[in-house]
Image (cartoon, helix red, strand yellow):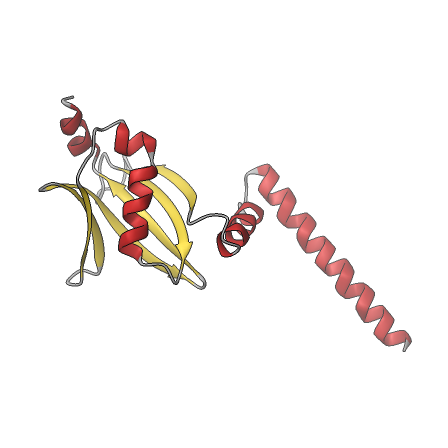
Amino acid sequence: MQKDKILFYLWILGGFFGILCTMMGSASGVDHTFDYGMNSLELYLGKKNYFEGNVIYAEDDYKHNGDFILEYYVKNTEDIEIISKQIVEENVFIFRAYNLSDINVVWKSVDDELYVYGGDELYATIDVERKGLLVKLSFYWNQEKLNQNMGG
């Protein structure tokens, strides 16, 4: 009986310590585990359809020179093409700022990637990475093509 109490209190203390470390890591900007956990919970409770991850400027990336990357997370059960189109259309800084219209998201099984087209123009490539219960969508936006669409 005494052994069970000790194990129970150690389990509670370990859980409390784990939550405290997660919160401290999140607050310091070192780790986004707490935010990721809370956003995932809201996603699965139906409060959100997706949540934003990182924004990365890939100026030094040889494959995506000059592009910027927007990362989003969705449920693993979502129709990736439909939710990707929704993400683009709801992003004011992309859809409205660059005057995008007639957006189509197309899956190409040859290279297992999604592409964002505006008419015949390719604006972004989407890498799809399954991460357990979530899917990470990385939108690689072509800055040059977006600027051309603005007339800039």
